[in-house]
Length: 367
Image (cartoon, rainbow, N blue to C red; front, side, top):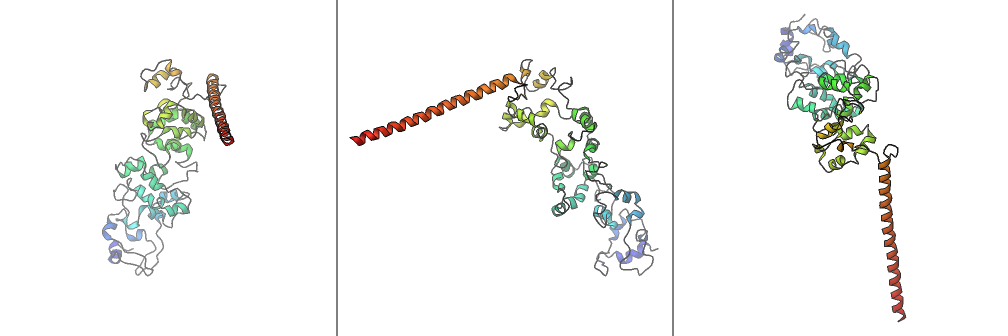
């Protein structure tokens, strides 16, 4: 067994290299301040028992001490990602700092940059058919909270994916598997989780309906924007296409298309955001008993007559909206008839003008 002083008498030269040119020098001060600084070198380099030692000693096995962490990596997406998966994230073994040290690679504020070394590499993303998620995350509200606000409680990569046993989002055991997303996001957004689970979407997901939307379907996974910047109408419309189509025919939509989007009613303004309830539920803001109050948030003089307005009336559906259907049909026929009449009138007038012009020309020729 060699004491640190014996090993560092040579290896404290940070420029030291072995016969193959590999860097084997260790900064003594950095090593002593690391989590391994109190250990003897031979605690990790177990194959070295005497000096001089071989130029290529056996690789250090982190699992000898960190058995639980090593077991967690097995079966994860990172199991075969590198010959040295531990140092890929934690840094060189001689400089690993406690995770609560602001200089540690796995300090909460540094985790995005650590993961971004691989997941921000466009070439690696292309090679492994992965999304280049690091720049997306850094532009999101979570990334902003970490990088600009320095909030330790803001969600980083580990918050959602875990640390050692990171699984594919297609794995039912993964915290990013679709059915697990509400609980994962709910670790921070507890109040919203309660609202979501009480709504129609949460109940559908709880019943096993994999088509029901979860947090990432509306907010995305990595490019999450501030709620005030989110546009609920196109998001909701990705599933509720029929309702989106009829909404686009309304005054609210037409005004929003002119640039006043924030000032007019969107899906969430009427239906709610997370605790979305069917219109038949007495607690729903679009229940007939609650419409005056719901519309009154924007239209102060709303009354029972005002809320008879149909925001999603489909003029093409004769069965549900017969009056609207026939009014639309009448208007289409009226406009078509008027336009046809004036087109025919103009055409006949042109023909008459050409005939008269030709006739006057022939009369002048006879003279």
